[in-house]
Length: 355
Image (cartoon, rainbow, N blue to C red; front, top):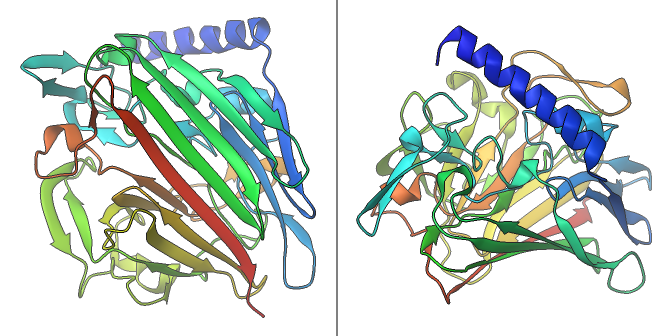
């Protein structure tokens, strides 16, 4: 894309966001269970805060984000967002399905990431059910994706339900139906976790364990090559707990890689994160076959909530999903959903204190 084309695209997107913000009412919804609460906006079905006590009872917000909806409209980091129709990357923004070649809308060079410029993170979802508090607080949001949206075939009806459960559990369930054509569906979301608190600095001292003994190797554009390789004797080996920063200097920027999870259980162990200073621990399970481990690899600080400047490696993401670029690799688990089939992807975050 030429420089003038990029400038024109930026201007068009800026105007779109201004018109969008002026014409569409965007809401913020809270789920609360004692001293555990989260806030969600229907723009991108986005988690904007998760409040939890630490070992001393101090309440902190443990996800990165912004103070205003306008900042989320202009966000390029997918802070807390629901990702779709296909999370992560599709190489060359294209694929072939049932003999038909589909050209998608690229938004990361020649590739597509997180569903394109108008992915599920950039639209307003409909709130269909909402129970703010009580024994089982939850919210369900839905989105209808039209045939041809961002180049994808077929219409899709998607939903995501966020629910708080005892004790200190956050359940996230993604569902979708392909209404009239076979299409790839790979829903995920992108909370940037810093369980020490979003203003606590970087996460390099967090201890993490990831239950995947293999990764999907990638090229220089982070597109999978199709090869699935063992993590043994590499900086990607977190089968035993290590600090995030213990071997990060052996990588060019940081972690941004998909792990093939080892378990075949319906709800698979994904990872455990521990922050010694706060005592908080986060245990993640999911029904997806993979998880993208990302360590906020930006090269300079970003302004977030309360004006706090998030440094490089200010948070980590564990995006559970079907492997990236699965539509172009027959040896990967399939992301194709046929009409009449039901897509379900469940994630469970369990928070606890280790003193």
